[in-house]
Length: 239
Ligand code: TYD
Image (tube, rainbow, N blue to C red; front, side, top):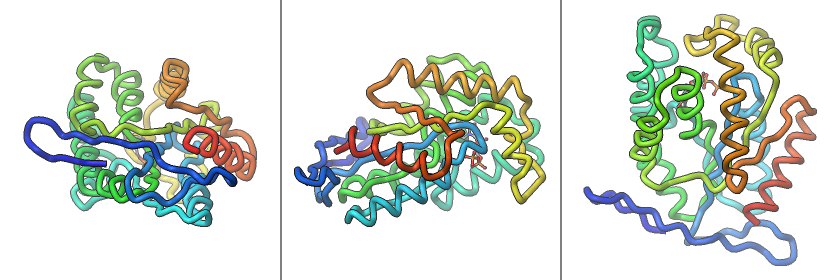
């Protein structure tokens, strides 16, 4: 894979990864990595499943890099703080929110994701560009064209090879948010139930439209069952 940061065209050429023919497990490859993004509402259990998948992949010899959005870089974590925690963020308009998420993502792609992919790693990203499509586009009603254009500008053409949506009913998601240790909800989590219904539906619509990239996993199943299903998808689709 080549990643050029030249002015005109950031280009990533992804070659297919190689896999062990007998076990079907991904092999370490120097030439091409894979990007797997995880999406879903707050409280869907993404983070737990990312840790489990990372450890499974490491057990089969893969180089794994886990990142989260917004954040994942020093600049990105500062941006995250402005978006998610800053109390003044309550006055933030949807356009600013979109651009800040995109800015954090642009940094993450160039600083962490692209270099990891080019050395053959599997990158697991806790949220990626689909979060902006769904939260800012569908949730906050921003027009789809600029959202898509800004998303694409931010990622260059570093698109996920697989996107795992962990789907839970909104009530489950909201209950889990309330049960979290830091029981003060952050700015994003204070949005109302209609917003989260739109987010959930938004992911399902995206997934239906792009079945070759997305897989939807039922997040109400047990943690072990979800991990098993995710592994099966990773093997089937990237193996
Ligand atoms: P975080 O505490 O990381 O939530 P989670 O564990 O559910 O990922 O906060 C990230 C918040 O930012 C979350 O509410 C989703 C939101 N978000 C967007 O609205 N747009 C985006 O592009 C991204 C990456 C996140």
